[in-house]
Image 1 (cartoon, rainbow, N blue to C red):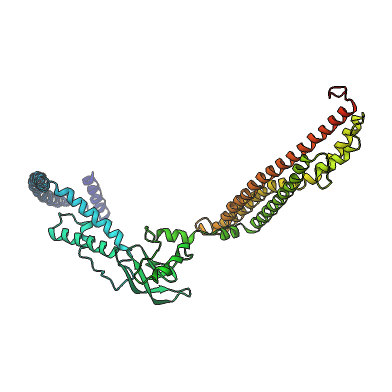
Image 2: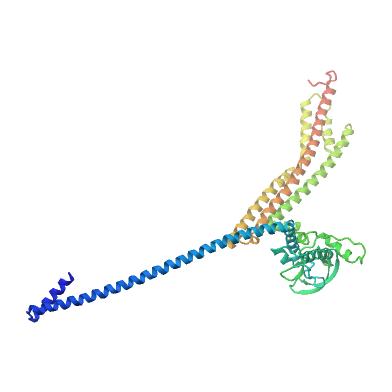
Length: 454
């Protein structure tokens, strides 16, 4: 197709130019075919050269692949040989170490425990005048991957001996203490073994961040023994130590006292306490009053023939003595009932108020709980729940008011029950004596009726 197009183009050009000689046209065609043959030969030569290069590259790649496969086989054989040698070496090491492997684990455990104990111990913290250099390198022993040497075991043993010796000493030393204004100064302190550091001001705790000793927020009651102990001058003295090396003292110092807990209850807590005290005082007053009344009634029971208006029973006997012996039992019963009813207010006085206070106290505790939770949720809304200290105030109020309400209600209920029981006993005595007067009156009015009312 390509040759046909070229022939047509050539023919067209010859026609245009007026060339009509057929021989010239044939010569031109022959020259064109020769030129085309040269081009095709050059292309075939180029293709042949490229084929040879590709075949050479393929041969080189096959050779490299064979070399890599040979190298891989050698490495695989070497890996298998190394694995076998490693297994044999591990087994030989296990057989050689024997029980020493267990000892190695014990040494590492003891070194690790001793390192954690001495890291914050008062034997080596803030007390520059004692031996702070340990014979053994506890960090190296705790992280070692090989069997310890005999020298390492001796050093560990010497460290344990040194620790035991320092723990048995009571020495005085100078150290930096943190004052209330945030400044530090040097003061003489006394170290009692590895447990506590004391002075005339109380117990001291080491603060690693401040790099100084700080006093407790609140000294325990046992701190009063320290002054006598320090002034014993080598004699026998009594002192209380913290076996947890300061942990219990720290907990005790941040534990709020009862006065602080009451303050956490807020206004509702003070109201509950006030109502509880009022109710208890009222109950005690009524118990004393009922005891006085009961004493007079018991005394009157012995001398019923001589009524005394200073006690309820005497007044009831006087009220019914005028109608003794009459046949109108209903009139006598009505007068005695009236006299008993007159005595009831004085006997049952204050019981309703005590019962009311016993019921109001837990309700106020519930009110404090609700207000405390409202304050807690307000703190969460304003600041989020990331810091528990911001919510502690509301939670403390919620819990303390509930406790105060129960503490006030329980004794008030018990005392109300006690007062009511004493008053019922007195009322029962008055009713029995009133019934006895009615029976006596009917017996005197009807002496021949065998004491039975008609």
